[in-house]
Image 1 (tube, rainbow, N blue to C red):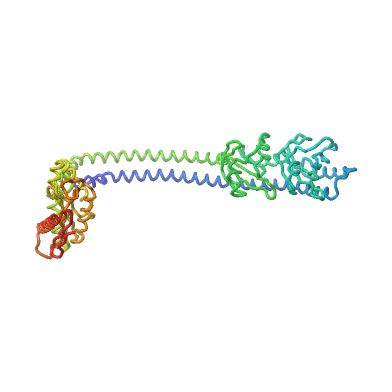
Image 2: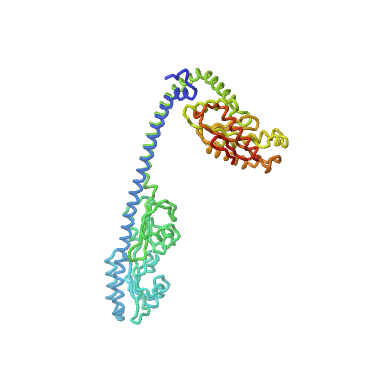
Length: 523
Protein backbone atom coordinates (compact mmCIF):
# COMPACT_ATOMS: atom_id res chain seq x y z
CA UNK A 1 0.00 0.00 0.00
CA UNK A 2 1.37 3.43 -0.97
CA UNK A 3 1.81 5.96 1.83
CA UNK A 4 -0.60 8.84 2.23
CA UNK A 5 0.50 12.10 0.57
CA UNK A 6 0.09 13.83 3.94
CA UNK A 7 2.18 11.29 5.82
CA UNK A 8 5.26 12.58 7.60
CA UNK A 9 8.65 10.99 6.87
CA UNK A 10 8.60 9.19 10.23
CA UNK A 11 5.24 7.65 9.29
CA UNK A 12 5.69 7.13 5.55
CA UNK A 13 9.01 5.28 5.72
CA UNK A 14 7.65 2.45 7.95
CA UNK A 15 4.55 2.32 5.75
CA UNK A 16 6.59 1.97 2.59
CA UNK A 17 8.88 -0.64 4.10
CA UNK A 18 6.44 -2.60 6.23
CA UNK A 19 6.03 -5.34 3.63
CA UNK A 20 9.80 -5.57 3.14
CA UNK A 21 10.33 -5.72 6.88
CA UNK A 22 7.75 -8.46 7.32
CA UNK A 23 9.20 -10.45 4.44
CA UNK A 24 12.74 -10.01 5.74
CA UNK A 25 11.71 -11.01 9.26
CA UNK A 26 9.91 -14.08 7.98
CA UNK A 27 12.79 -15.25 5.82
CA UNK A 28 15.38 -14.62 8.53
CA UNK A 29 13.26 -16.40 11.15
CA UNK A 30 12.73 -19.40 8.90
CA UNK A 31 16.44 -19.67 8.08
CA UNK A 32 17.51 -19.12 11.68
CA UNK A 33 14.93 -21.61 12.94
CA UNK A 34 16.26 -24.27 10.60
CA UNK A 35 19.84 -23.59 11.60
CA UNK A 36 19.05 -23.43 15.32
CA UNK A 37 17.02 -26.65 15.17
CA UNK A 38 19.83 -28.39 13.32
CA UNK A 39 22.39 -27.13 15.82
CA UNK A 40 20.19 -28.13 18.77
CA UNK A 41 19.58 -31.57 17.30
CA UNK A 42 23.28 -32.05 16.59
CA UNK A 43 24.31 -31.02 20.10
CA UNK A 44 21.61 -33.16 21.68
CA UNK A 45 22.73 -36.17 19.64
CA UNK A 46 26.31 -35.45 20.67
CA UNK A 47 25.34 -35.32 24.35
CA UNK A 48 23.48 -38.62 24.01
CA UNK A 49 26.47 -40.19 22.26
CA UNK A 50 28.84 -38.99 25.00
CA UNK A 51 26.46 -40.20 27.72
CA UNK A 52 26.38 -43.65 26.13
CA UNK A 53 30.17 -43.61 25.86
CA UNK A 54 30.46 -42.69 29.54
CA UNK A 55 28.11 -45.54 30.46
CA UNK A 56 30.20 -47.93 28.36
CA UNK A 57 33.41 -46.71 29.98
CA UNK A 58 31.88 -47.10 33.44
CA UNK A 59 30.76 -50.66 32.73
CA UNK A 60 34.14 -51.48 31.26
CA UNK A 61 35.99 -50.09 34.29
CA UNK A 62 33.74 -52.11 36.57
CA UNK A 63 34.49 -55.29 34.61
CA UNK A 64 38.24 -54.61 34.62
CA UNK A 65 38.20 -53.87 38.36
CA UNK A 66 36.26 -57.05 39.09
CA UNK A 67 38.65 -59.07 36.94
CA UNK A 68 41.68 -57.59 38.71
CA UNK A 69 40.13 -58.29 42.09
CA UNK A 70 39.26 -61.90 41.19
CA UNK A 71 42.71 -62.51 39.76
CA UNK A 72 44.52 -61.21 42.82
CA UNK A 73 42.07 -62.76 45.24
CA UNK A 74 42.64 -66.24 43.81
CA UNK A 75 46.41 -65.87 44.04
CA UNK A 76 46.20 -64.31 47.49
CA UNK A 77 43.96 -67.11 48.77
CA UNK A 78 46.69 -69.60 47.84
CA UNK A 79 49.29 -67.50 49.61
CA UNK A 80 47.17 -67.31 52.78
CA UNK A 81 47.00 -71.13 52.84
CA UNK A 82 50.75 -71.46 52.28
CA UNK A 83 51.55 -68.94 55.03
CA UNK A 84 49.36 -70.80 57.50
CA UNK A 85 50.88 -74.18 56.56
CA UNK A 86 54.50 -73.05 56.57
CA UNK A 87 54.21 -71.09 59.84
CA UNK A 88 52.51 -74.06 61.52
CA UNK A 89 54.42 -77.04 60.07
CA UNK A 90 57.52 -75.43 58.64
CA UNK A 91 59.31 -76.43 55.45
CA UNK A 92 60.07 -80.18 55.28
CA UNK A 93 63.83 -80.36 55.52
CA UNK A 94 64.20 -83.92 54.25
CA UNK A 95 61.80 -84.09 51.32
CA UNK A 96 60.05 -80.92 50.12
CA UNK A 97 58.82 -82.70 46.96
CA UNK A 98 55.27 -83.03 48.19
CA UNK A 99 55.03 -79.33 49.00
CA UNK A 100 56.52 -78.47 45.62
CA UNK A 101 53.88 -80.62 43.91
CA UNK A 102 51.28 -78.65 45.80
CA UNK A 103 52.74 -75.43 44.43
CA UNK A 104 52.72 -76.83 40.90
CA UNK A 105 49.11 -77.97 41.22
CA UNK A 106 48.07 -74.50 42.36
CA UNK A 107 49.85 -72.91 39.39
CA UNK A 108 48.21 -75.35 36.98
CA UNK A 109 44.76 -74.66 38.43
CA UNK A 110 44.86 -70.92 37.79
CA UNK A 111 45.48 -69.62 34.24
CA UNK A 112 46.84 -66.29 35.53
CA UNK A 113 49.42 -67.94 37.77
CA UNK A 114 52.99 -67.83 36.50
CA UNK A 115 54.87 -69.31 39.48
CA UNK A 116 54.85 -69.75 43.26
CA UNK A 117 57.92 -69.19 45.43
CA UNK A 118 58.91 -69.76 49.02
CA UNK A 119 61.82 -67.50 49.95
CA UNK A 120 63.92 -67.76 53.08
CA UNK A 121 64.81 -64.96 55.51
CA UNK A 122 68.10 -64.35 53.71
CA UNK A 123 66.36 -63.96 50.34
CA UNK A 124 67.37 -67.36 48.98
CA UNK A 125 64.84 -69.52 47.18
CA UNK A 126 63.67 -72.39 49.34
CA UNK A 127 61.06 -73.71 46.94
CA UNK A 128 59.49 -72.76 43.60
CA UNK A 129 57.01 -74.26 41.21
CA UNK A 130 59.10 -73.86 38.06
CA UNK A 131 62.34 -75.71 38.86
CA UNK A 132 63.68 -78.36 41.19
CA UNK A 133 66.94 -76.53 41.55
CA UNK A 134 67.02 -73.49 43.85
CA UNK A 135 70.75 -73.42 44.48
CA UNK A 136 72.25 -69.99 44.08
CA UNK A 137 68.87 -68.41 43.38
CA UNK A 138 67.74 -65.55 45.58
CA UNK A 139 65.44 -62.53 45.64
CA UNK A 140 67.30 -60.48 48.19
CA UNK A 141 67.28 -57.46 45.87
CA UNK A 142 63.61 -57.71 44.90
CA UNK A 143 61.15 -55.03 46.03
CA UNK A 144 58.68 -57.45 47.54
CA UNK A 145 61.39 -59.16 49.65
CA UNK A 146 62.74 -55.84 50.93
CA UNK A 147 59.23 -54.64 51.73
CA UNK A 148 58.34 -57.67 53.86
CA UNK A 149 61.73 -57.73 55.54
CA UNK A 150 61.29 -54.10 56.67
CA UNK A 151 57.53 -54.08 57.36
CA UNK A 152 55.53 -56.20 59.78
CA UNK A 153 52.41 -55.85 57.65
CA UNK A 154 50.82 -59.32 57.28
CA UNK A 155 48.54 -58.33 54.43
CA UNK A 156 49.04 -59.00 50.76
CA UNK A 157 51.63 -56.82 49.03
CA UNK A 158 51.45 -56.11 45.30
CA UNK A 159 54.75 -55.14 43.78
CA UNK A 160 55.66 -53.33 40.56
CA UNK A 161 56.15 -55.28 37.30
CA UNK A 162 59.40 -57.26 37.15
CA UNK A 163 61.16 -59.58 34.72
CA UNK A 164 61.17 -63.13 36.09
CA UNK A 165 64.71 -64.42 36.59
CA UNK A 166 63.77 -67.97 35.79
CA UNK A 167 61.45 -67.31 32.83
CA UNK A 168 62.43 -63.86 31.56
CA UNK A 169 58.74 -62.91 31.34
CA UNK A 170 57.05 -59.80 32.75
CA UNK A 171 55.08 -60.62 35.88
CA UNK A 172 53.20 -58.88 38.69
CA UNK A 173 53.98 -60.17 42.16
CA UNK A 174 51.60 -60.82 45.05
CA UNK A 175 53.39 -61.70 48.28
CA UNK A 176 52.92 -62.22 52.02
CA UNK A 177 55.32 -62.18 54.97
CA UNK A 178 56.33 -65.32 56.87
CA UNK A 179 57.04 -65.04 60.57
CA UNK A 180 58.50 -67.24 63.26
CA UNK A 181 56.55 -67.86 66.49
CA UNK A 182 58.41 -64.97 68.11
CA UNK A 183 57.28 -62.61 65.34
CA UNK A 184 60.64 -62.29 63.62
CA UNK A 185 61.00 -62.33 59.86
CA UNK A 186 61.04 -65.86 58.44
CA UNK A 187 60.80 -65.21 54.71
CA UNK A 188 58.27 -64.56 51.96
CA UNK A 189 55.75 -66.52 49.95
CA UNK A 190 55.21 -65.00 46.52
CA UNK A 191 52.91 -65.63 43.57
CA UNK A 192 53.84 -64.16 40.20
CA UNK A 193 51.01 -63.41 37.77
CA UNK A 194 51.68 -63.53 34.07
CA UNK A 195 51.32 -60.04 32.53
CA UNK A 196 50.05 -61.53 29.27
CA UNK A 197 47.07 -62.94 31.14
CA UNK A 198 45.82 -59.38 31.66
CA UNK A 199 46.68 -58.40 28.09
CA UNK A 200 44.75 -61.33 26.62
CA UNK A 201 41.73 -60.48 28.76
CA UNK A 202 41.80 -56.80 27.77
CA UNK A 203 42.01 -57.69 24.06
CA UNK A 204 38.45 -59.01 24.27
CA UNK A 205 37.01 -55.52 24.70
CA UNK A 206 36.13 -53.34 21.71
CA UNK A 207 37.65 -50.03 22.79
CA UNK A 208 38.73 -48.71 19.39
CA UNK A 209 42.18 -47.93 18.14
CA UNK A 210 42.79 -45.16 20.68
CA UNK A 211 41.03 -46.69 23.68
CA UNK A 212 43.08 -47.60 26.71
CA UNK A 213 42.84 -49.82 29.77
CA UNK A 214 45.33 -49.88 32.57
CA UNK A 215 45.86 -51.24 36.08
CA UNK A 216 48.18 -49.34 38.41
CA UNK A 217 49.15 -49.35 42.04
CA UNK A 218 47.41 -46.68 44.08
CA UNK A 219 50.75 -44.85 44.43
CA UNK A 220 50.80 -44.32 40.65
CA UNK A 221 53.07 -47.16 39.48
CA UNK A 222 51.81 -48.64 36.21
CA UNK A 223 51.32 -52.43 36.22
CA UNK A 224 49.73 -53.25 32.88
CA UNK A 225 48.21 -51.31 30.02
CA UNK A 226 46.41 -51.82 26.75
CA UNK A 227 47.82 -51.00 24.28
CA UNK A 228 50.77 -52.90 25.70
CA UNK A 229 54.02 -50.95 25.83
CA UNK A 230 56.95 -52.49 27.64
CA UNK A 231 58.39 -49.04 28.40
CA UNK A 232 55.24 -48.10 30.31
CA UNK A 233 55.54 -51.00 32.78
CA UNK A 234 56.51 -49.68 36.19
CA UNK A 235 56.22 -46.07 35.04
CA UNK A 236 55.26 -43.48 37.65
CA UNK A 237 52.00 -41.81 36.55
CA UNK A 238 51.11 -40.25 39.91
CA UNK A 239 51.39 -36.75 38.43
CA UNK A 240 48.74 -37.40 35.78
CA UNK A 241 45.28 -35.81 36.23
CA UNK A 242 43.69 -39.08 37.33
CA UNK A 243 45.89 -39.44 40.40
CA UNK A 244 46.47 -35.73 41.01
CA UNK A 245 42.95 -34.34 40.57
CA UNK A 246 40.29 -37.04 40.49
CA UNK A 247 41.21 -39.92 42.81
CA UNK A 248 41.68 -37.63 45.85
CA UNK A 249 38.07 -36.48 45.42
CA UNK A 250 36.31 -39.81 44.81
CA UNK A 251 37.31 -43.50 44.69
CA UNK A 252 35.35 -43.97 41.46
CA UNK A 253 34.08 -41.71 38.71
CA UNK A 254 34.03 -40.80 35.05
CA UNK A 255 35.75 -37.73 33.60
CA UNK A 256 37.08 -36.52 30.28
CA UNK A 257 40.70 -35.39 30.10
CA UNK A 258 43.81 -35.72 27.95
CA UNK A 259 46.11 -38.65 28.64
CA UNK A 260 49.64 -37.93 29.76
CA UNK A 261 50.73 -41.18 28.10
CA UNK A 262 49.92 -40.37 24.47
CA UNK A 263 48.08 -37.01 24.43
CA UNK A 264 44.72 -38.50 23.39
CA UNK A 265 41.54 -37.03 24.91
CA UNK A 266 39.54 -39.87 26.40
CA UNK A 267 36.43 -40.50 28.44
CA UNK A 268 38.00 -42.05 31.51
CA UNK A 269 36.14 -44.18 34.01
CA UNK A 270 38.23 -45.14 37.01
CA UNK A 271 37.81 -46.93 40.34
CA UNK A 272 39.87 -48.31 43.18
CA UNK A 273 39.94 -52.10 43.53
CA UNK A 274 38.30 -53.29 46.71
CA UNK A 275 40.72 -54.70 49.36
CA UNK A 276 43.81 -54.22 47.18
CA UNK A 277 45.93 -51.10 46.55
CA UNK A 278 45.04 -50.97 42.86
CA UNK A 279 43.44 -48.46 40.55
CA UNK A 280 41.91 -49.43 37.21
CA UNK A 281 40.93 -47.15 34.38
CA UNK A 282 38.98 -47.79 31.20
CA UNK A 283 39.20 -44.98 28.68
CA UNK A 284 37.45 -44.55 25.33
CA UNK A 285 38.70 -42.06 22.77
CA UNK A 286 36.28 -39.15 22.61
CA UNK A 287 37.10 -38.60 18.96
CA UNK A 288 36.33 -42.22 18.06
CA UNK A 289 33.12 -42.21 20.09
CA UNK A 290 31.95 -39.15 18.15
CA UNK A 291 33.08 -40.29 14.69
CA UNK A 292 29.64 -41.59 13.73
CA UNK A 293 27.98 -38.50 15.16
CA UNK A 294 30.30 -36.23 13.16
CA UNK A 295 29.48 -38.01 9.90
CA UNK A 296 25.73 -37.67 10.52
CA UNK A 297 26.11 -34.08 11.68
CA UNK A 298 28.00 -33.10 8.52
CA UNK A 299 25.42 -34.79 6.32
CA UNK A 300 22.52 -33.03 8.01
CA UNK A 301 24.43 -29.74 8.06
CA UNK A 302 25.02 -29.86 4.31
CA UNK A 303 21.35 -30.63 3.66
CA UNK A 304 20.11 -27.84 5.93
CA UNK A 305 22.68 -25.38 4.58
CA UNK A 306 21.57 -26.12 0.99
CA UNK A 307 17.92 -25.62 1.88
CA UNK A 308 18.69 -22.46 3.83
CA UNK A 309 20.74 -21.06 0.96
CA UNK A 310 17.85 -21.70 -1.46
CA UNK A 311 15.40 -19.92 0.81
CA UNK A 312 17.82 -17.04 1.27
CA UNK A 313 18.27 -16.58 -2.49
CA UNK A 314 14.52 -16.57 -3.08
CA UNK A 315 14.06 -14.16 -0.20
CA UNK A 316 16.74 -11.84 -1.53
CA UNK A 317 15.00 -11.70 -4.91
CA UNK A 318 11.69 -10.88 -3.23
CA UNK A 319 13.29 -8.23 -1.06
CA UNK A 320 14.96 -6.66 -4.07
CA UNK A 321 11.58 -6.19 -5.77
CA UNK A 322 10.09 -4.73 -2.61
CA UNK A 323 13.07 -2.42 -2.15
CA UNK A 324 12.83 -1.13 -5.72
CA UNK A 325 9.20 -0.27 -5.19
CA UNK A 326 9.91 1.41 -1.87
CA UNK A 327 12.72 3.45 -3.44
CA UNK A 328 10.42 4.60 -6.23
CA UNK A 329 7.79 5.71 -3.73
CA UNK A 330 10.39 7.32 -1.55
CA UNK A 331 11.78 9.45 -4.34
CA UNK A 332 8.35 10.98 -4.90
CA UNK A 333 8.14 12.12 -1.28
CA UNK A 334 11.75 13.07 -0.70
CA UNK A 335 11.47 16.65 -1.91
CA UNK A 336 8.28 17.32 0.02
CA UNK A 337 9.58 15.78 3.22
CA UNK A 338 12.87 17.66 2.88
CA UNK A 339 11.01 20.91 2.57
CA UNK A 340 8.78 20.11 5.54
CA UNK A 341 11.81 19.13 7.58
CA UNK A 342 13.53 22.38 6.70
CA UNK A 343 10.47 24.36 7.72
CA UNK A 344 10.28 22.55 11.03
CA UNK A 345 13.98 23.15 11.64
CA UNK A 346 13.59 26.83 10.95
CA UNK A 347 10.57 26.99 13.22
CA UNK A 348 12.48 25.23 16.00
CA UNK A 349 15.44 27.58 15.59
CA UNK A 350 13.08 30.53 15.76
CA UNK A 351 11.86 29.28 19.17
CA UNK A 352 15.36 28.57 20.58
CA UNK A 353 17.89 30.87 22.20
CA UNK A 354 21.10 30.74 20.21
CA UNK A 355 23.44 31.20 23.17
CA UNK A 356 22.09 28.85 25.83
CA UNK A 357 20.09 26.41 23.69
CA UNK A 358 17.05 27.04 25.90
CA UNK A 359 13.66 28.24 24.71
CA UNK A 360 13.74 31.92 23.72
CA UNK A 361 11.42 34.74 24.79
CA UNK A 362 9.06 34.11 21.91
CA UNK A 363 8.73 30.46 22.82
CA UNK A 364 8.24 31.37 26.48
CA UNK A 365 5.45 33.87 25.75
CA UNK A 366 3.59 31.33 23.61
CA UNK A 367 4.01 28.58 26.21
CA UNK A 368 2.90 30.91 29.04
CA UNK A 369 -0.27 31.84 27.17
CA UNK A 370 -1.06 28.20 26.38
CA UNK A 371 -0.39 26.91 29.92
CA UNK A 372 -2.29 29.81 31.44
CA UNK A 373 -5.34 28.96 29.32
CA UNK A 374 -5.06 25.28 30.30
CA UNK A 375 -4.81 26.20 34.00
CA UNK A 376 -7.95 28.32 33.65
CA UNK A 377 -9.85 25.44 32.04
CA UNK A 378 -8.66 22.83 34.55
CA UNK A 379 -8.64 25.11 37.61
CA UNK A 380 -5.09 23.93 38.25
CA UNK A 381 -2.14 25.93 39.62
CA UNK A 382 0.57 27.44 37.45
CA UNK A 383 4.00 28.38 38.81
CA UNK A 384 6.78 30.55 37.41
CA UNK A 385 10.40 30.79 38.53
CA UNK A 386 12.39 33.87 37.52
CA UNK A 387 16.18 33.58 37.78
CA UNK A 388 18.71 36.40 37.55
CA UNK A 389 22.50 36.08 37.68
CA UNK A 390 23.87 38.16 40.53
CA UNK A 391 26.26 40.99 39.60
CA UNK A 392 26.45 39.85 35.98
CA UNK A 393 27.44 43.28 34.68
CA UNK A 394 30.50 43.21 36.93
CA UNK A 395 31.25 39.68 35.62
CA UNK A 396 31.32 41.00 32.04
CA UNK A 397 33.42 43.98 33.09
CA UNK A 398 35.96 41.77 34.87
CA UNK A 399 36.15 38.72 32.59
CA UNK A 400 34.85 39.95 29.27
CA UNK A 401 31.77 39.19 27.24
CA UNK A 402 33.11 35.89 25.88
CA UNK A 403 33.49 34.59 29.44
CA UNK A 404 30.06 36.01 30.23
CA UNK A 405 28.55 34.02 27.38
CA UNK A 406 30.27 30.85 28.62
CA UNK A 407 28.96 31.55 32.11
CA UNK A 408 25.38 31.92 30.81
CA UNK A 409 25.68 28.67 28.88
CA UNK A 410 26.81 26.80 32.01
CA UNK A 411 24.00 28.35 34.06
CA UNK A 412 21.44 27.57 31.35
CA UNK A 413 22.52 23.96 31.34
CA UNK A 414 22.22 23.73 35.14
CA UNK A 415 18.78 25.35 35.07
CA UNK A 416 17.59 23.01 32.30
CA UNK A 417 18.68 20.01 34.37
CA UNK A 418 16.67 21.33 37.33
CA UNK A 419 13.29 20.72 35.72
CA UNK A 420 11.92 17.25 36.34
CA UNK A 421 8.70 16.92 34.28
CA UNK A 422 8.15 16.81 30.50
CA UNK A 423 5.67 19.73 30.65
CA UNK A 424 8.08 22.12 32.36
CA UNK A 425 9.69 24.82 30.20
CA UNK A 426 13.08 26.47 30.70
CA UNK A 427 13.67 29.69 28.74
CA UNK A 428 16.04 32.60 28.49
CA UNK A 429 13.81 35.52 29.40
CA UNK A 430 16.29 38.20 28.47
CA UNK A 431 19.93 39.16 29.10
CA UNK A 432 21.09 37.25 32.19
CA UNK A 433 17.52 36.46 33.26
CA UNK A 434 16.05 32.95 32.91
CA UNK A 435 12.55 31.60 33.52
CA UNK A 436 11.13 28.17 34.39
CA UNK A 437 7.42 27.54 33.79
CA UNK A 438 5.92 24.78 35.99
CA UNK A 439 2.35 23.75 35.07
CA UNK A 440 0.45 22.14 37.96
CA UNK A 441 2.97 23.20 40.64
CA UNK A 442 2.10 25.17 43.77
CA UNK A 443 4.28 27.74 45.52
CA UNK A 444 5.95 25.24 47.84
CA UNK A 445 6.84 22.91 44.97
CA UNK A 446 8.14 25.81 42.86
CA UNK A 447 10.25 27.07 45.79
CA UNK A 448 11.78 23.59 46.14
CA UNK A 449 12.63 23.55 42.41
CA UNK A 450 14.05 27.05 42.65
CA UNK A 451 16.20 26.11 45.62
CA UNK A 452 17.55 23.06 43.75
CA UNK A 453 18.46 25.32 40.81
CA UNK A 454 20.16 27.85 43.10
CA UNK A 455 22.20 25.11 44.77
CA UNK A 456 23.12 23.54 41.42
CA UNK A 457 24.50 26.86 40.14
CA UNK A 458 26.32 27.45 43.40
CA UNK A 459 27.91 24.00 43.07
CA UNK A 460 29.26 24.95 39.64
CA UNK A 461 31.81 27.05 41.61
CA UNK A 462 32.27 29.56 38.80
CA UNK A 463 34.72 32.21 39.98
CA UNK A 464 33.32 35.76 40.22
CA UNK A 465 35.55 38.28 41.96
CA UNK A 466 32.86 40.95 41.80
CA UNK A 467 30.24 38.95 43.69
CA UNK A 468 30.05 38.36 47.45
CA UNK A 469 31.51 34.94 48.21
CA UNK A 470 33.73 35.03 45.10
CA UNK A 471 31.47 32.68 43.11
CA UNK A 472 28.70 33.09 40.56
CA UNK A 473 25.26 32.93 42.25
CA UNK A 474 21.69 33.59 41.24
CA UNK A 475 18.65 35.16 42.85
CA UNK A 476 15.36 33.36 42.34
CA UNK A 477 11.80 34.69 42.44
CA UNK A 478 8.81 32.34 42.60
CA UNK A 479 5.09 32.81 42.13
CA UNK A 480 2.19 30.36 41.70
CA UNK A 481 -1.60 30.67 41.69
CA UNK A 482 -4.75 29.14 40.26
CA UNK A 483 -5.91 31.45 37.45
CA UNK A 484 -9.53 30.28 37.70
CA UNK A 485 -9.96 31.73 41.19
CA UNK A 486 -9.69 35.36 40.00
CA UNK A 487 -9.69 37.41 36.86
CA UNK A 488 -5.99 37.25 36.18
CA UNK A 489 -3.69 37.55 33.18
CA UNK A 490 -0.46 35.76 32.25
CA UNK A 491 1.35 39.03 32.84
CA UNK A 492 0.24 38.98 36.48
CA UNK A 493 2.22 35.77 37.02
CA UNK A 494 5.34 37.28 35.42
CA UNK A 495 5.07 40.50 37.42
CA UNK A 496 4.55 38.65 40.71
CA UNK A 497 7.55 36.37 40.07
CA UNK A 498 9.60 39.39 39.04
CA UNK A 499 8.73 41.16 42.30
CA UNK A 500 9.75 38.08 44.23
CA UNK A 501 13.04 38.16 42.30
CA UNK A 502 13.65 41.76 43.36
CA UNK A 503 12.89 40.74 46.95
CA UNK A 504 15.60 38.06 46.65
CA UNK A 505 18.10 40.61 45.34
CA UNK A 506 17.13 43.17 47.97
CA UNK A 507 17.50 40.52 50.67
CA UNK A 508 21.14 39.89 49.84
CA UNK A 509 21.10 37.84 46.63
CA UNK A 510 21.82 34.09 46.28
CA UNK A 511 18.41 33.16 47.66
CA UNK A 512 14.90 32.07 46.68
CA UNK A 513 11.88 34.30 47.43
CA UNK A 514 8.18 33.63 46.84
CA UNK A 515 5.46 36.34 46.63
CA UNK A 516 1.72 35.59 46.77
CA UNK A 517 -1.32 36.38 48.79
CA UNK A 518 -0.99 33.23 50.88
CA UNK A 519 2.79 33.07 51.12
CA UNK A 520 5.48 35.69 51.35
CA UNK A 521 8.85 34.30 52.21
CA UNK A 522 12.49 34.26 51.29
CA UNK A 523 14.54 31.05 51.60
